[in-house]
Amino acid sequence: MNELKKALQKRMESGTLRELTLIPSGMVDFSSNDYLGLANDLALKDQIIKKYQSMHSKNGATGSRLLTGNSAHTLECESFLAHIFGMPTSLLFGSGYAANLAFFSSIPQKGDTILYDTLSHACIKDGARLSFATKMAFRHNDLNDLEYKLKNSKGKTYVACEAVYSMDGDQAPLKEMVALCNTYHAHLVVDEAHSTGIWGLNGAGWVAELGLTKQIFALISTFGKAMGVHGAAISGSQVLKDYLVNFARPFVYTTGISDFEVLAIREAFSFLKKHSERTRKLFKLNNYLNEHYSFLASASPIKTFIVGGNKATKEWSLFFKKNNFDIRPILSPTVGVGQERLRICLHAFNSKKEIDFICKALQER
Image: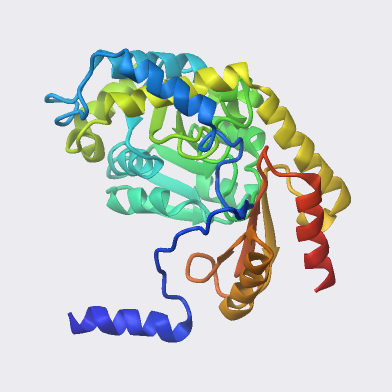
């Protein structure tokens, strides 16, 4: 226990102690991953509840899907998602973290190689750590470094990247990565956590937008961000799904997601199909910011303002909080020392006036 206290004390002294906080009501959201505003949409909420009330289902899954936790609703949802993503099959998970952990801990075998972008999310790195395969990072979006490591890889090689990177808001050069993987017979695995719902027909994602679906070994899609609900799916071949069902410990040994969560996923995609204006408005605002404030420009709704230093970054966040804007500081060790930043997320419900206030404040201070 003393060692735990010492570790916490060290965090406190360095200003890096993490704490659970509540968002004060009424603040303007420039922080959450609710890019399309679906998480707070009352019409979608009402649609989900009404549909759920008409269903004959249990409150919980009651067990793992290999025991009592499977349902017709879950199987139908997986077929529905496979169609959305243009893949043969999909397999549902409770979260994107669990999906990545399942894939990378079970699919790559001893003697294989996992190559992952150095800025990949912690769940990709954690899954790789649990694998018996060799693990190597390549420099962020650096195709030359990736090719060098592909040339030196052994066994089957799995290349992991994110379509959109959560802390920088930039995109992976997927077309070029597909070409490299084809040349070196590697399997490309794309995490679409921050692109599902925003790009592609009916929210299929950045891979679908680029027409690369058939070139991807596995697609990992998350629903707790732009889709406004919860859960995730791994999409790919039938063999991939069957293997995960048999060997992926985060799938085999966890309780299945409830029918309510399954329904929420389906209804969120159905709602988005009928309300594509959400996506158009988000991109309209993004174009406005990019054109008027180039220092924050990015193709995605995620904007980064590097401050440097935890204290200074917290002070910036406090300034915006006093002006009723929820903009969170991203501190080390979440990002590297010197890379502490404000992470500014655009949403379809934000306004040009709000964008102007934030950007002008950053320019003037």
